[in-house]
Image (tube, rainbow, N blue to C red; front, top):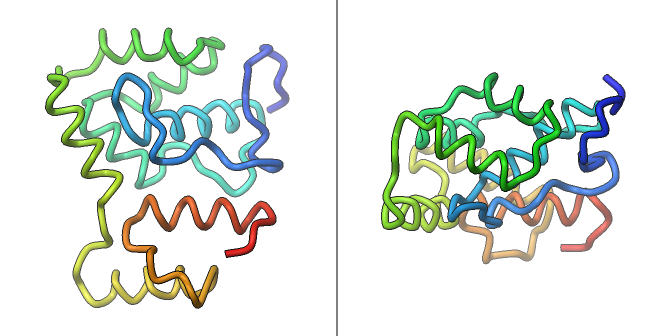
Length: 154
């Protein structure tokens, strides 16, 4: 769908969404999710997907509906307006402490410890770099993947 609603959407075929470490209202992952949603609406999402398993962590923590959030994005609302909507519509009203703890964990969250997931994670890292021993969390992997996918050298 073309960007005919004047939505301020990133072109994710030209650059990655914001880092999973970026925060909005204290929530990690949320700015990245909003970038992907806006880009999907504008038809510029490239290989990125809104409401993916990573986004589900945000959806579940807040208790919001991904389709309803996408409708808010389609109305060309900015980050501040979206945060207001989330705060007013989230089923799970979180305290600042809960938000901080959850976001800190999301930034450090490693792959699950089952052999299959660990092997998949190691394979994904190996495709991007054979020398980066510091890639331990999903946010590390996402940052590395975004960097390499858009021309950086690991």
